[in-house]
Amino acid sequence: MPITDWPISERPREKLLTRGAHSLSDAELLAIFLRTGITGKTAVDLARELLSEYGGLRPLLNADQQRFCQSHGLGQAKFALLQATLEMGRRHLQEKLSKGDALSSPQAALNFLSSQLRDYHHEVFACLFLDNRHRVISFREISHGTINGASVHPRTVVKQALSENAAAVILSHNHPSGVSEPSQADQQLTKRLSEALSLIDVRVLDHIVIGDGEHYSFTEHGLL
Image (cartoon, rainbow, N blue to C red; front, side):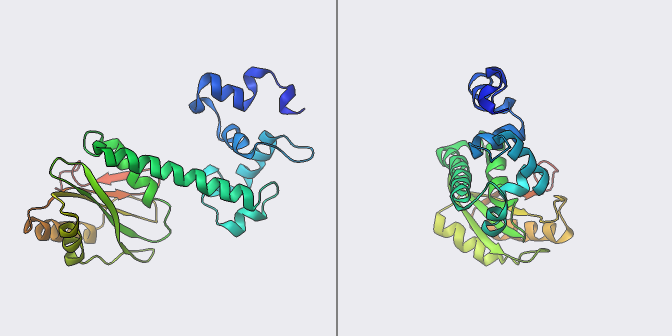
């Protein structure tokens, strides 16, 4: 049965407009993105099939162009649309931070850092540089490494902090393993960076480790 023959309250688009996007399942959200199904399958049927094929929404959204375009019902046009949509989401979070919400809304900072770092398949170390009113100046990826770690030199972070005229910084890196618990090396690096940055009067407000659906805050655990 085509979606147009469904009761209005069960159609994904109408459901979103009346109840909000949060009320939709992953398949219903994906169906709106797909817009149409294929012969013998509605957009919702196709969405469910794709979610089963990829093992969930996130693996589908993270698929590279070749893998994505191989799936029935998808293609280059939808891949381009998806990438544009994801990038708009990232820029929306960055714009919110640029208006000074980083510390008045810690969750906004966490959401932004997670959106930037969680899907890397290798470790990336980054910094949110802040002014003396704790408004975000910039977000910089400082170092890219392997699946197990990224080499970070304190002088590189200090040089960037001076260049940004920063008064404070939030350190962050991802753990491709998905487990956010910091290693001993992470703790030692945080101490070295804090000591180096204190020499130029830049305060380290936090070091946030991004895992898969979880995070670890050094400040929350009393390590800063």
